Length: 336
Ligand SMILES: [Fe+2]
Ligand SMILES: [Fe+2]
Image 1 (tube, rainbow, N blue to C red):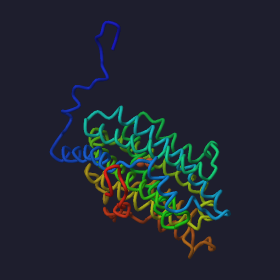
Image 2 (tube, rainbow, N blue to C red):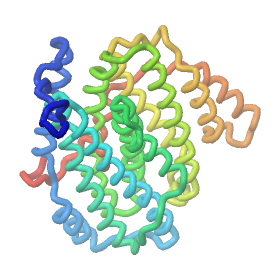
Image 3 (cartoon, helix red, strand yellow):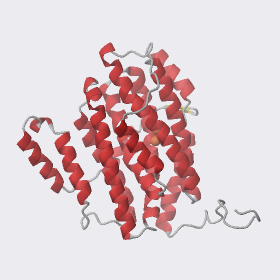
Image 4 (cartoon, rainbow, N blue to C red):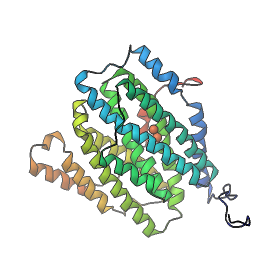
């Protein structure tokens, strides 16, 4: 707006009329449901964390694993802050009512994730310190981009599956009972957030040119590179917790594939015709850096496995990949 009160406004009166067809209307309806579902499933961190601490008689972690647990979940803590900021950016910038509602509800959830994780880490005597370069670079890439499809792909379809994988794998390890129970609450919320990317990214893709979509895939490769570097940073601590990075790689890949497949198929992307060579290269490098146990000590076999991964087409995906996160939790409305 200029001094005379004329000019452009941030109030978008067209926010109700941006739907192209019935298929898009159906997807936007799902985005709106993320908001309503978020309200039904809201839980109170100031109630749940003390309840779990009391149930388990305090936070009990073997002394030799304490530092490793703190380090891994310090990365998660700042990831939650980044997720809060990114979802708030999306809540402001997405125009259609339903998508805006979905992102707003995510910002509400991420604020809770951040303060509850901070409260939990204080139980481990955590003191604030900056992140390593790789996890910060990954988060900054998504925080700093002004392109909405980049933000949505980066946050909802790439970073959320990494968080879900870490939560699921740590929970299954049974390393610390309070945390393992708490992660059920986080998983429930994060799985809903992936839904926003799956349902709304196709709408943004439909309005992009081929070269813009190619640039988006290049951005995805940059994200994957930093995600691999982040895992390398976490490797030592994960091993102390009894978790093999390979498990994280495999699970994350499956979840990211299921999410991006859903979004790109709704947009009409033909998986069989297209091949993303930079991503295939990165998959091969990941295979080499985080090898399967059977080839770990044999460089030749590692190279072979990486070569096979390069040519492997990840066409199969399982839409039920996220069902594992549907835990029963105590919400502000009762058990759900
Ligand atoms: Fe979160
Ligand atoms: Fe999230």
